[in-house]
Amino acid sequence: MSLTLRFSLRRNGTLLGKPRATYSKLGSDDALSRAFVASILEALDKALPLPVSDSMGGAIAGRMLAPRFTAALVGSS
Image (tube, rainbow, N blue to C red):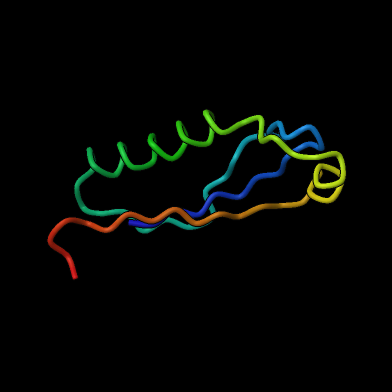
């Protein structure tokens, strides 16, 4: 399974707006897919605000980030 989120951060490391899913390839099991997406959003929520230095905060403020989250299905090759 795979999900790419797109979002921006403020210079203080807090989320700017809402994350948007720009790509997803989820499995056929709806419950497992929902749990996968929920775990990603929970992890993002726990990681924010991102601790950044003043210079790093200035460099990333307002820029789009697009991390890709993946999980291998058990038994798949």
